[in-house]
Image: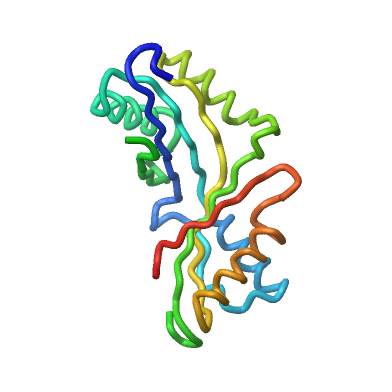
Length: 88
Length: 88
């Protein structure tokens, strides 16, 4: 993990933006109701990515992650993303 | 949120099991390499669900979430799931 710099592990969460329909979440709510789960208020369905990367510093890793999110992992027109550090 | 009991918010993360291929993660690794991200060691691609539910207690909510995961949100043959509490 430390071939070129330091190893970092980051979790990216990608959900439909609040104002965008979430058909997968709605389908799961309906399915849970049908199989007897009556306490469910709401489901938001999204994607998650656990990214392991090498970078010279946490700041450089953070900058790379933000670019990855905007260029590939999320579609900023219809999705919001958030980043959580699983390593330092 | 407190119509019948207490409101809880839980995040479920679902990833391919370690011994199962993760073709989406591999495709993203390859795509990131092609667009110039050279520090990426590994990507794991999964699903996430933010579940808002009412239950009489946290123990009851926890039991319901575990059943939801096994019955609908994850396929335990090929996927592992984990649960994180976003509320109490």
